[in-house]
Amino acid sequence: MNSYILAKSFIGFEAVRDRDKLMHLFKQGGFDLDPVTTAWCAVFINSLEVAFGNLGTGKENARSFTTYGMQVDHQDCNDLSDVEEGDIVVFRRGNNSFEGHVTFFVRWVDDQTMECLGGNQGPNRSVCYENKPIDMVIAIRRTT
Image 1 (spheres, rainbow, N blue to C red):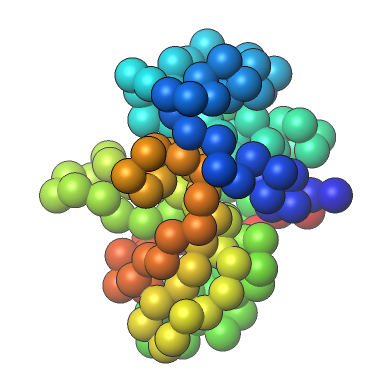
Image 2 (cartoon, helix red, strand yellow):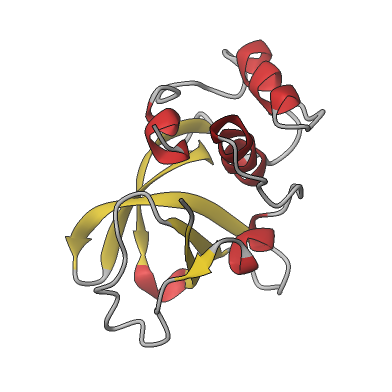
């Protein structure tokens, strides 16, 4: 089992309804974070990485994953053919250089859109699948 497969066991968990369960996962990953009051996409991925035996980034921000693991060639955003299911994808968010969002790649929806699995997504700030545009990708990383 890897962290991506482990993430699937949390599908449907919501920040408010499943607060205690998520906080327990986060504590196991080394984070004392309340998913109701704080963005938690990076803490979710980090906690899964730690549960799988990897180090994670140890940071609460999504962009900390831009240097994690091994780089998947994505310099030409029109050719992301090397991306594989379970790769970690970091996206731009907002208009500044520190905001971001981090997920796992699931599959291609079309040549400009990827389906991703991550935490703190959707209307209920849940663990769910969500389609993301590739023009927002800033990094794709691969771990064991």
